[in-house]
Image (cartoon, rainbow, N blue to C red; front, side):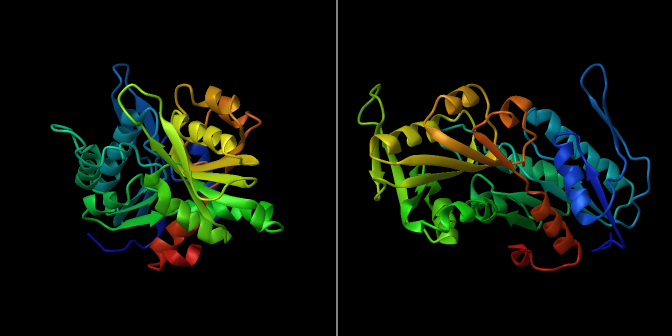
Amino acid sequence: MNSHGNSIALFSGNSNRALSEAIAKELGINLSQAEVKTFSDGEISVSIPETVRGKDVFIIQSTSSPVNNNLMELLIMVDAIKRASAAKITAVVPYFGYARQDRKARPRDPITAKLVANLIETAGVDSLITLDLHAAQIQGFFDIPVNHLYGAPMLSKYYKELVKDNPDDFVVVSPDVGSVSRARNFANDLGLNLAIVDKRRPRANVMEVMNIIGEINGKICLLVDDMIDTAGTIVNGAEALKKNGAKEVYACCSHGVLSGPAMERISNSCIKELAVLDTIDLPERVTMCEKVKVLSVAPYFAKAINQVFHDKSLSEIY
């Protein structure tokens, strides 16, 4: 197999077709044809009607809900393209599912993030481009190059206009201790101070006690996280900030999973606005919500694909 293809081919799975088309538009190329169908029993069928021999192939597919279908679709597309003699295959996975199971928290727990990494490699992927893995160490689960993009610079760019005239009125807040590193980078991008919501449960079956580390009284708080699933953490954090004197609360995340009661919780919360990146194809009930602002990652992924194809540094895209 060649280490580099002679031209680029861009394929899309069905998980987020709109993002794939936006990335293709940014690159100034058309998406290559792929017929992805489902048999009546649920099996996925993939057919590639155009040649990919000797090409650098990029397959765009978030492994979001329905995660098992989207993951299998990616693996089968990779297998089809590998058997068609592509020179190199890069999986572009804006949202990497199963990333929350990255260690054994209890006896006999699986490490599903590692299992998925193994599946992707075994299918024939030569490199990976993804954004904001839930745990940074997942990069080490792969024995292929992992190009890890960060959502904080994309989100902070959106807030710079809001912050620029009165930076002393704002503070960046991490919704829990585990997100401090991400929030600190976000705060550094905006030149703001950092606060932390420290959640503690004093004893079993007793409501959580929220402690705020840092000065937030009279401030406009910017809560930042990598993903929002059921929105319990972000909404509880916002309520705690308001109770401790925050003037307003904005929230943002890289991955808007927004499952179950998430939208109801956000709509009824004190959060003034939620900004999310479009790594996941968001349903209309989310995009039409007045509190939600969707920001496109297409320009960043297009630049990343271009840099990888031309063997250039990804740090230049920021």
